[in-house]
Image (tube, rainbow, N blue to C red; front, side, top):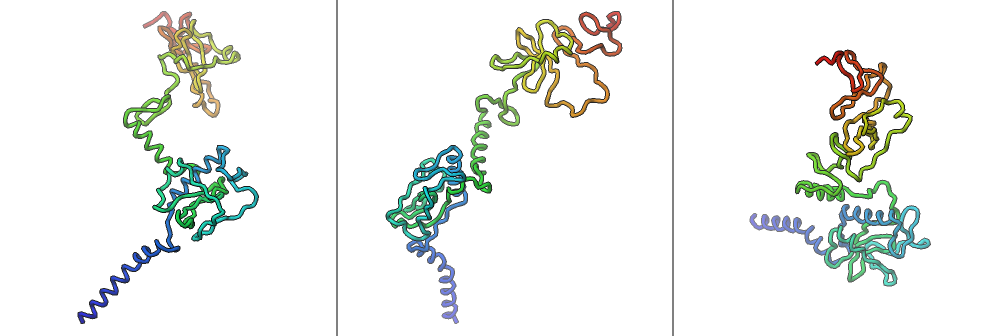
Length: 287
């Protein structure tokens, strides 16, 4: 009985070990399979599509409408699992692309044969794995930028942000790195900031502004600015927040606050106030 159990145990061990031995044995024969990850395939596609969009194709290929193709109607020059014929030329991949790929196993190399990217065994020139083709670089199903690339960019700038830095032209906020606002109430515009004056037909409908001030448009904002100092004294309208329809009842004219006085833009003054030479005041200058 003990002998039978021993034989059964040995058989079980052999059955469990056989796949590993088979895989090890395949490494010495033509049945060996070296897997290329989907990340590597996307990296290859992204690299050559970026080159294609930039108007470039690898040596020996011509730029066509949808990708980089060999001249004429050249057929596939290689066969999976078979050695590459001696007369067929292959090209190593650019270093910039190789740096993005999982390193090839020892004794193997990523190469380009016409418009195909493959993994080739160096000693035998045997093609062991297709990686991708650059014959069609306008496949809408394949992204130009991979999610991995997006994650790398986000991680880089997040680390910079956490270290207290932001790229030039951006300011650090609680949320992240944001464009610096072109203007702030009560602060002067920087010399590099340009603005537009309001059109004359519109200015003709407005009451004159105090001496030394002018209306300007900066992006989507209508502002009141001190001419000499370029200090923004008031925001009149944010054009990005205009109502879609005219209000049923006209709203009261907007008051513009300037240093030491109130200039009322409109035809009259609010109820209970009278329009004087220097603004809207209570009757008899009541306190």
